[in-house]
Length: 611
Ligand code: BES
Ligand code: ZN
Image (cartoon, rainbow, N blue to C red; front, side):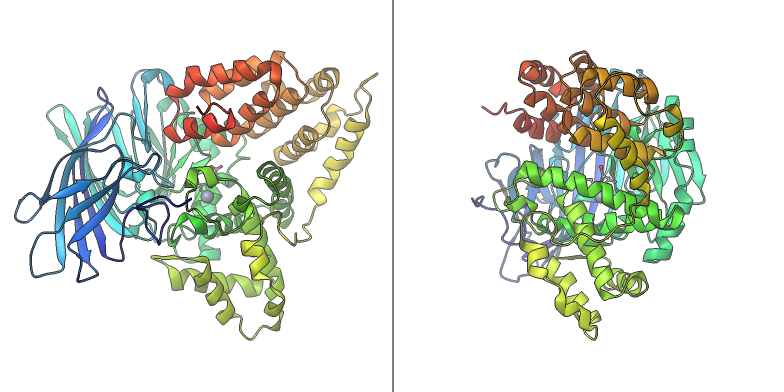
C-alpha cells in the first residue's frame, strides 16, 4: 500500500529536496515544562533546485504554526498544511518569496504539541532526583517533524545552530557543541552549533538538572547527580574506545564526544546523537561489561553520522556497518574471541526474530520496502545482525581485515557528509575490488533482497561459548532431583557475557521447572543481579516456566525501564501466557502515558490492543 503524498525518493517523508532543499537550520526555542511544549521559531535556509517550482515542502507533525514569513523582508508567506496522515504527520507546503535569487530564508513561528512523538516530558517522579522534571528527544527515525518543520529525510543534511531558553536550574544539552550560556531574567539561554551537516534525525535535545564528570580529553558524561559517579566509572574507557575507532575508521570529525545517561524510560540502549550520545541507565552494570553499546554509538560517528542511509530502507548501511565496527573495536580492546562470541550469540537473537516475523517476511530482507510500512514497525535486529554478517562475509571473501579495513576507510572518506543507498555501496565495492577474482562468487541478490537468515554464517571462534555449552548441557539434562550439577566454582570462571549466553540458551530451550530454576538462582543469584542483560534473560526464563511469582517483578521492572529491547519481548512473553495476558494488557494501558509515543505505538500491536 502506498501512502498518498509521500516522496518517491523517501517513502517516510513528504518533503521533495530534489525540487527545493533546506541547507541550514536556525532554532530558537523556549522550554515550557508546565505546558509540555517547546515554543519559538526556526529559520530555514532554502535553495531552489528545480527552477520551475515556487514552493518548498516540509514535514511536520502536530505543530501549532502561528506564522510563516520571509526572514529578510518579514513578509508573510502563504502556506498549506495538509490533513495529517497518521504516524507520518502533515505535509507543509510553503510558497517561496518572489525574487531573483534561488536562495531564501524562511521563518516559521510555532509551538509543539504536548504529545509530540519525538519528545518525552518526564514528571519529577520519573527522575532519579524526584525534584525536577526532565525533557529528552528521540528523533530517529522520523520524529524530528514533531519538534520542528523540516525535510525529515536522511537524504537531506544541514548544519544547525540553536538558542534554547530554559529555567535557570536546568542544563540544556544538544547534539552539537555548546558555545555559551547566558543568564536572562530568571531563565538561561544556551547556544549551540553543529558545524557538520547532519540529517534531521540527529538533532537532539535534553533538558534536566544535570551534573557532569570528565571522562577524557574530549569527553564528559552527563547525568543526574544521584548516578553521576557510577556513570563516570562505567564509561571510563570512552577515550580508549574513541581512539580505537579512529584507528579503524579515520579521524573523528565531531570535536566533542560526550555521553548523556538518561532516566530509565529512555526507549533505546543508545542513540548516536552527534557530539552527545544518549544512553540508557541499564548500561550501568557496575563492571563496565555493557560498554559495547558505547563502542556501537561511537562507531556511528562514521557509519550513519558521516555516511548516512538515504532513507530507512537502507538502514542496514547505518546499523549493519556500525555493529561490524563495534565488534572490531571489541576485538582490539578485548580479544578476537570476544568479538566472535558476540557475533555468534547474536545470531541466535536474529534467528528468534526471523522466526517471529516469518522466514518469508519482507521485513527480514536486508534492504526493505517501506512503502506503506512505518520505519518504527520495520525496526528489528535484521539490519543489525544480518548486516554485520554480510560485512563479515564480504571481508572474508576479499581476503580478511588487512584488505577490507583500508577499503572501509576509503568508503568513509568517499561518502562522508553524503547520504547513500545500497547500490552506491555495491558499486563502490565492485570498483574497489574489481581486480579481486573472489568477488565473482558474491550473491548480492540473495544477501540484499531475499528474506530469511543470512545465506552464509562465517565460522566464528566459539571458544568462549564451548565452556558454557558444557554447563548448559549439564543443567538441561538434570532432572531436578538431588543437587544441581553446577557449582559456585563453575560460575566463578564465567564472564558476564558468558552468563548472558548461558541464560540465553536456557531461555530458548524447553521450559524448565520452577524447582530447577530456584536451584539455579541459588548458585547465580539472578534475582538480585544488577546487569540488565542478565536480568532480562533470567526473567524471560522464569516467564517461560510460568513462574507466577515473577510476573509482578517483570511488570514492576518494565514500568520503570523503557528500553524496548527488554520491554517488547517481555510483554510478548506475558501476552503468550494466556492466564496473564489480561493483566499484562491492563498494566500497559495503565502505564502508557509514561511512555514515548513510539513505545506505546509498537506495544499496542505487540499486545494486540489495536481497535
Ligand atoms: N540508532 C540506534 C537506535 C535507533 C534505531 C533509534 C532506530 C531509533 C530508530 C542505535 O545506534 C542503536 O542501534 N542502539 C542499540 C545499541 C546496540 C545495537 C549495541 C540499542 O538501542 O540497543
Ligand atoms: Zn546503532
